[in-house]
Image 1 (tube, helix red, strand yellow):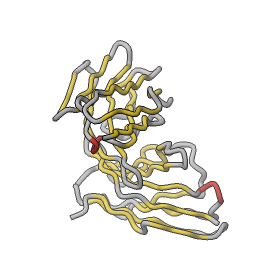
Image 2 (tube, one colour):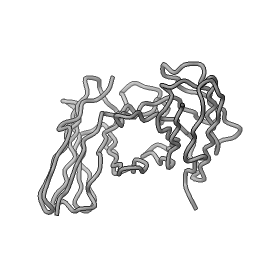
Image 3 (spheres, chains in turn red, brown):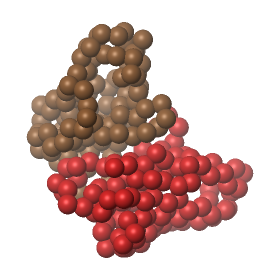
Image 4 (cartoon, each protein chain N blue to C red):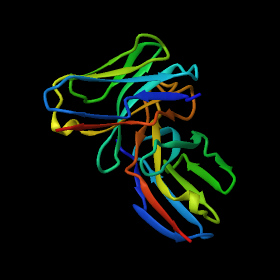
Length: 115
Length: 110
């Protein structure tokens, strides 16, 4: 079943912060986050595994609440280059493992950063 | 070197035709995928291949068939193309981690 992302769209000024949420009704093994710019392929940002860890690099970080089956992506002090559509992709618990099931993606959050 | 490469980048064809999209990865990944992205940007998995074995096949019409001559290649053959097949098709690969996507093939059926 498809994870639910919110909000659907966000418009920010450069330097502002954003939070994108992803929730699933199924027990999850992992949550992936990707960014896709117009006309380009999705680009991997980070993966969070079952265990409720938080990850981050530069000004982009994410958390995974295993009990709630929710993940959040945090973008701080946003830059123009952060603009794009952000997708969460989920891998269910109890699946084939090793990525064999593939990811089920949310509908995406469209992020626009204005100067 | 491009990690995951797809050809062609654009494909315009008439209804009823048969076409193929090629995908190659040089990352040494064990698993490859085909995803379809529709006009609303929804990414839906079509196939997953692990070590040349089809692992999962979502509710995809049997007009679509993946073919993997070796671990580094996963091609997509589409028979009797329909208008609703118009979309961007992405190939991807992974090895117990994040996916690396190809640049996509924009298929337009007229």
